[in-house]
Image (cartoon, rainbow, N blue to C red; front, side, top):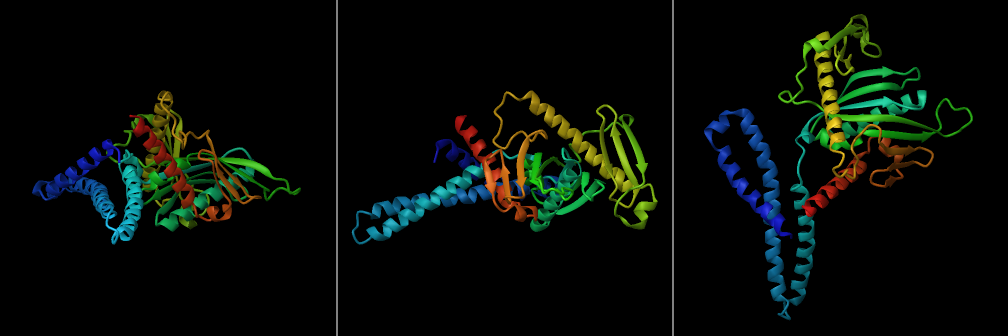
Length: 359
């Protein structure tokens, strides 16, 4: 194991002792926000420290087994222990490297998933609905909760645009690499000649703003309109002007919500979506200014990136950023997205590790 990793792991062990001490202090226990923050750090640091302790133990086991090789009666057992210890040390070192990677504090947040139909007309709108269903089913599989914040339906039942709020553990960190252009190749329901068409949608995944870090909105820069919600929702939602649209006048960015039953709730949710979009705009502009830095394997997340192709005739999904091809398209569309997300996460981690080794 490299020396710089050993030094960082030793610091984690020291930090764990500090956190044990701090969490036992009365003033910390009385401050719930501080207590929760330190508890979360303790959980992360303890996971590293436990694996580091196991790595050190297996290193000692390996050394002891190597000494026994000189004893003919113990050589066979020693060789088995050496093989076992070496395999576990490799596995533990990989785990420790991943655990020590820089963490984005936004990864733990809930997220807004915005899906927009692009080129392809009605077929693109139908594909947008398929993507929304894919993310919704994946969320259900992992125990997340999904709300439809706003939806603009097409004539054939798809979506011109739909915004989902996804709530759960590590939502943004898990879905962040879904941002970009999604291309579909299939025979549309409106195609009478059986020809394969290519359509596209864009997906933008934005972290839900933290209450304490959200962009402060100036009321003078907002135009707030109310209107009658459309689509499903029952008699109440169709008979009252409960839907809310908020326009940020300086940028022209629009957010709306029609899922709630009250105008007040919809306004609050629309403002949260607007804040997320403004933060995403700032992030994109900042990324553009920092374009001289190395671009990660998983791309910039820019909506213009074509990140993935869904080929229905071949049952094939291809993620172009990491050259991943899977022939299980229908399973993925039914919510079995874990293998794709894992591959993207591992590629991102590999890039971060490569950067650390160059420092």
